[in-house]
Amino acid sequence: MPAPLPTTIKLHKTSRTLELGYADGRSFALPAEYLRVNSPSAEVRGHGKPVLQTGKQNVALLNVEPAGRYALKLVFDDGHDSGLYSWDYLYQLASEYPQRWQIYLDQLDAAGASRDPDVSVVRFKP
Image (cartoon, rainbow, N blue to C red; front, side, top):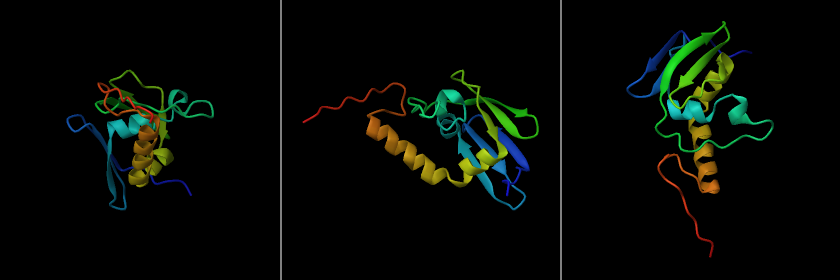
């Protein structure tokens, strides 16, 4: 069964969140960073091998554009604008936010990378 369509979509530029509201009363505020690192674009998903996105802590959403009746095109201030977020994918990102975010943080840690664009992580091997 397809995911429900949002009844409200609000871009909050100050808090850098995208708010999605649904007819059943559920509402989600998704951070721009979370949406950026989970972009459905080929740049992020790779061709079968996802590319870990680093240094996106301060990324902001500049614009939200409809893509037909099936998706949103999100425009980020780092120049990224090639991912089309289908209604199904947005609902999945919203409803799985805590788990997906922790997986991302664990991947960063395992890679010795950082969310902060001004930080380089250096690890010394024993």
